[in-house]
Image (cartoon, rainbow, N blue to C red):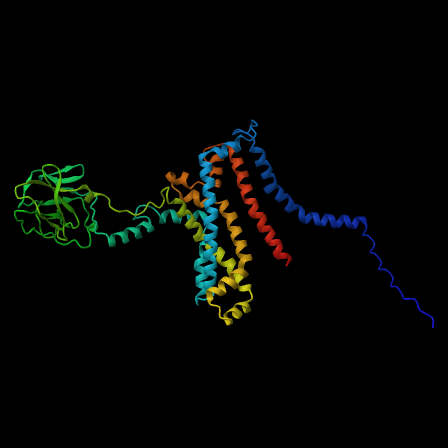
Length: 451
């Protein structure tokens, strides 16, 4: 037998290189698509960054090179320190809160029948601009209960559980033996026990009277250890009546404290007027002389709510407005990830006896971790650049307490500072703070696309 040589297949022929003019045409075609994007990127991203970096080494006028003085001033300035501290607080509180609420809303959305309406209600604030949302929240948290919804609710709840009564603007009618001593209304003459004194007041609107106020009544009289009287509104709706007299249609003023002050200026006894305005001060010395006084606390404005927009609470209000807007974004992103996970793993865990909390903690949350990280990092980038809400919501006296880096940068450059060198340094600081989060997000996107 003769051995036959193994036939070796011929090597594949290499394609001949395209002619130079064809390669030139392909290059021009690619460049025609890429060039507009590169030009826009260079004009609106690269050039501003380089110009801002260079400008940060010059003085306010831009004429003198001062090196790192803007950066030194930036880190030794109290307002910049406050801005950095507030940005750290924002990064810790706002993204975590939005992500947590978004996770809860996404899980709840699968268990409610009206999920479309639920999704619409939570996501609707995203359709509102940050400027409009800032105006809404600044109005809601006004200190005046007649303007701010929050303080209207707080004042209403306080009034429901408080017995305090206040009549701001109330005063005694002229022509009666009652004096106004530093806001307190007191009888001019000294009285002995067993006497009585009335206080006809004006300056109170009928509509502002407490709900329990009724027709004023004449006091029933006092014994030798009491002083009694009536505090009433000396006005009849529509007019009429005799001044200083308790006529039909005149309302008592309930809840007013009445003090009996002895000759030494000490309060010997006190009482509170009832719904008909009558009072009886008991336990007085029969031989003593007293002046009957209505303390100024009766005529103060009373509880008006909480100073939400004050320096102590302004950051909480602004962060609340941000969470109200962006919780819907977190919900939609996490809900999309939730719809893509393998449900058989959850069913298998339930079959093995796991309760819903264990299923969520051991199965659902780990499967959603890539989406949660993306949402969290995206929100961190967003809050580092926060400007609109802080600038709109915070009133003038609270702006220093709510300052953030973006607002400080705008103020230094355009908001009256006119120091573009310092503003540029602040812009570079903001860029440096944002870059790590951007790099993390880009890497996450690349990992997801490579799978």
